[in-house]
Image 1 (tube, helix red, strand yellow):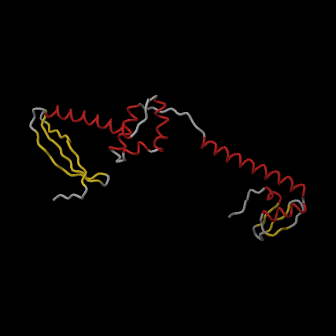
Image 2 (cartoon, rainbow, N blue to C red):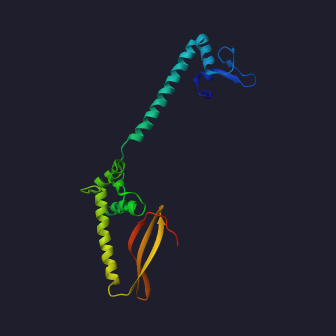
Length: 204
């Protein structure tokens, strides 16, 4: 550990690096090296009045450092009222994205840590209920129904072709079934099924 260069006792000495000695400014006594402990021993024995003042300075500095540390700790623990721009739909979509895009399990919605993060937001939005895994599943099921209806309406009375393809995402392999159809002279593609593969797939 390095020496404390800020010790107030050092102000009473002139340190000479050449011969590694400290000269007392009060009595010109030479002391070997620049250790604060040795300097304080000299002051206690030869200059008790000045040593008392030095001790008071040390206690003041120590008290100030302690207060600053306490203030820093208090700031970390303080609760703040902050303003954010969001809505119930944005929050719900973000939770759905965690599962559908980021590959997180539904159970993350029921984790205590996740609940502590979103609970203040839910209260701020005035939502009557939280966002559990069952609620997200239900929302996704309703959304899937709307997508199926939309696809059904799009391909009604049209000639379609089936396309089967495999894809890997987030270290998981899937078999996808797509349909293709022509509308307004453009080829459209819609996914109608996705199954996770338990074994690795190849192009063969």
